[in-house]
Amino acid sequence: MEWDRDKFRITDDLSAMDLQVVGDLLRETYWAEDRTQATVVKSAENSFNLGLFHEDTQIGYFRLITDRTTYGYLCDVIVTKRWRGRGLGKWMLECVLNHPDLKTCRIDLVTKDAQDFYRRYGFAAHRFEHMVRYAEDYSGGSDPATAS
Image (tube, rainbow, N blue to C red; front, side):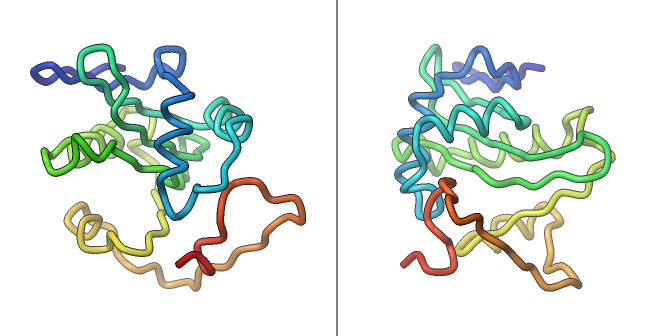
């Protein structure tokens, strides 16, 4: 699917995305600062992705791990610094939440600092405690529990 607004475009077509730009964006975050480019590519290939473009330049990215029926985990949400504060992240989240492939999914996320943003879209604390187990050779980025 694709959405257009002024000179901006959002697409769920992975082949249209610049995964080098995505990797560079993610390495600017606290949760993926150590993520290798190979991990960025492999995780994108095995996930639902949205790319945000200004004209032909990728400026944002959302990644959701999902079975497209019952569950989705929103795990990578980033808009490049230059384009923040213009409602583009909100627009991308609305596209995710209204995407026909995800309409029946419960969507979870973990955030250190954006709870207020997500509450506006119906996200709330879950009744179960979040738990995690890291593989010995985990290469998904820094452990958010220990990141400063």
